[in-house]
Amino acid sequence: MQFGGLNVITDPVFSQRAFPVQWMGPRRVMDPALPIHQLPPLDLVLLSHNHYDHLDKPAVKWIAREHPGTTWVVPLGVGRYVRRWGVRDIVELDWWQHTGINGVSVTATPARHFSGRGPRDRNKSLWCGFAFAKDGNRGYFAGDTAYHPEFGEIGARCGPFDFVMIPIGAYDPRWFMQIVHVDPEEAVQIYQDLVAPHAGMPLPLMLGIHWGTFRLTDEPMDEPPRRTVARWRAAGLEADRLWIARFGETRPVG
Image (cartoon, rainbow, N blue to C red; front, side, top):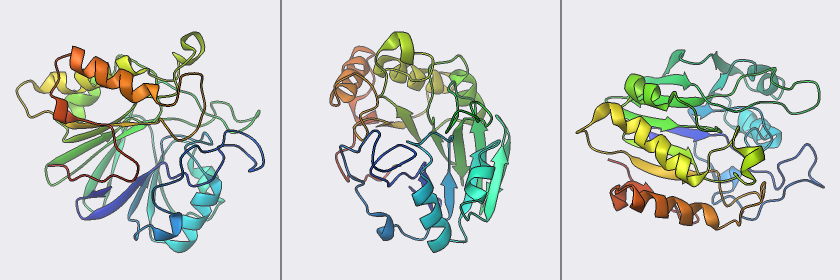
């Protein structure tokens, strides 16, 4: 994202596999739209948690080396991972804590998920989403999350938003995934919860994220956007407020 004159990236993952080693584990079905060496100078990285499909050690090491002035905002306990991979400027936040980076206010927001990169660190670090604001413009990155009752409070405290990024994929089977990942219908409900405290205000643009890159769960890879669009229409929401991005697509917000 280019936000408030800054270059901001969320959960940068550029490896071919979301796994401790690169010779096994979930492999990309879609390459990054932009190779890592073509990234512009980065001002801010927002890391939601430490799972391999969100915290990519090789990408962290490359960014730390090539963009040493970047500030990394992470949930509690995640700093110890990126610090040993070369990151210098780290801010750790608990839920509802906030910090200021070059005029951007960043707030860590509650999420329902879990953490761990191996058998010894299960839930030893936090997970979160992020709300960010500058000069009256506000955005929200939900991170990895199941549905929970705090989205209305996030909207009330940190909104009204201009742009929100909400996960729509990696949800089947529900008996197993419903406590950690939303499905498309719940993603639309999150949007409705976020905007409810600000009735009458312009609706934010929602970007559906967390689908179409790694095959992590059982649903067909092309199902999340179809179900999201169907639920969006059924809810009577404005069609131009939902963005299912094409590969490499960019869009101005505002």
